[in-house]
Image (cartoon, rainbow, N blue to C red; front, side, top):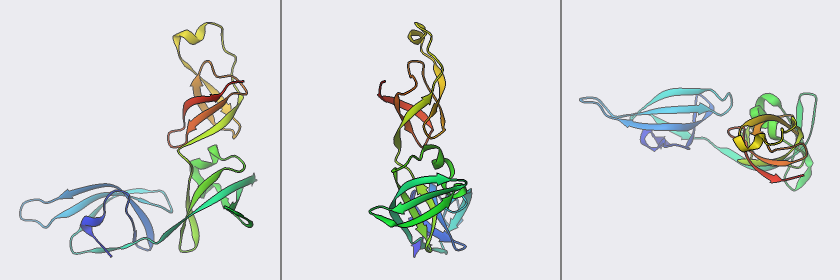
Length: 189
């Protein structure tokens, strides 16, 4: 069991039978009152972020979340198929509502982390940066790259990213999966 002052940033706990992650923690003690912890918490199933006040007389159960590496196989209709890393026979599918923004950056054979709570996968986490091939890019106007600027390019997964003007179709670029922004060019055609 966790006390209110142990709910630091990154701690996972259960509240109302749902797992939560602490995003922000502030210890408060006002005159003549008992101390409390002002928290910003995220429900790991719904993704909803809440403000929550944890009082000193309450205890919290640590969330039992299992993290497993899984490998993406393919996507068909609204289902994304995976298998446990190293065990291709253990296949399962997830809907895009569980995956959220991760679907923009999933390509076959990509390895990600799956978070399991009570035997059910509730969330996935991609690597911070992934390398993806540019499938569509507007043509570059000669000499326009000196001034800087960006253009919208489409990646092999269908995601749109703003990239510098010198990026062409066929280039491989590194994209930050948290922000959805271009990071660097990895390979030039």
